Length: 500
Ligand code: NAD
Image (tube, rainbow, N blue to C red; front, side, top):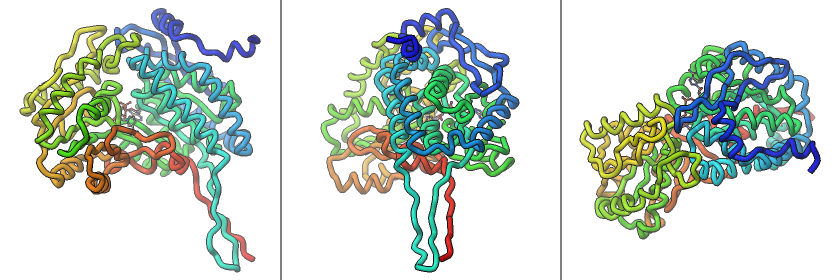
């Protein structure tokens, strides 16, 4: 292997874990001509140890990034490339990311407390697929011709929106980066990406690799730092055309305010959820669906926007289902995320642990019945919440209404289809839902009745990169991630009218 080739290979997960032990990891701004400033420590959520430094960006950092992004957009060094040329560069980026899969998986594991097996088997494969999918789609987008009659010719074109701010959450760091950055770059925008302050390490590496692949540095700038000191200036910046945000509904609302207070930039929000899993009395053999039900509730420690955190089950099947869930839950092993056997890691940080564990007490105080789990084992830095099930949760309880973002499942029994659908829709959120029934007509009725962006039938699924993802009600605003629909976030529509 040549020297040039060897520099494009990622390091092993053991090397990343060793660097973390030595507190040598780093993430900071990547902006042409900019030198990084002060840093804060980033921790391994499992043991609380410092694993490295992250640059503590501020409004000045954001200004520099937006300036560089605008300059590059105007210069056309990325925006004006032929789509096939952009595709080639993005595919080179994809190849570099493939070579760094293990390194990126290890960074998300150590930074976010995410089980390494999940990072290697789910997060990174989906991240890579996303980059390749948008690279391949980028030169297959067509405009339209309007039906004007013979007196004119009208072309309806899509153009890159300009400078896009991408603001990311901490629960799927590499994957959320790919969901936003890949479609925005693919159609020629300049992007300023701001990862969550808790999980910036993989974003730093992915951005470096994009530059190595040939994406101009000004077309993809990285800014790290706190929400208020970097996310807010990005949201308020008068020269940003679009902000695409994934995170909590509360912060999402702020971005709508930032837009109103500045330049009316387009805002797209992918926010929280309180998704129902509806098990009808005629659901197929529960033994075959119990794993889907568990994954929906506990995958990624429940730190998942589409977490199926409300289990609505017909009263005739509840005992059988709870028995199966309880029998299978010991397989959800808690432990050090670096251990391949671990399925449940710690909560991301103490503030979040306090919020999630607070629901254990609240649920009991409000009258829910603890049927599994409920402990907060004192391993590592003590941020673990055991996978937990509460039965007897009614629609007035906090556990029914509020996004916990942790491994706590609320069980509510129902008697009729009408009641099930009413309960399913009794939420401020509308991101996802799962329906289990053997009756295709009932499945169809229920899928149409449930107000959610993603409804899966007889399984738990978020779809694939080919299908749009996003929510109704307070789960989302202004657009969708994934699928060809994601491009709409990052394109303006222009009419060209030619008189004959
Ligand atoms: P968060 O809202 O706290 O933070 C998200 C981002 O916003 C971070 O980069 C943060 O630094 C920034 N931010 C925080 N305060 C800000 C402020 N005042 N101004 C500007 N920016 C600010 O969300 P989180 O805790 O990182 O992520 C968890 C949330 O994300 C959950 O609610 C989850 O449901 C949601 N989520 C949604 C989807 C989806 O596709 N719908 C996917 C993943 C996560």
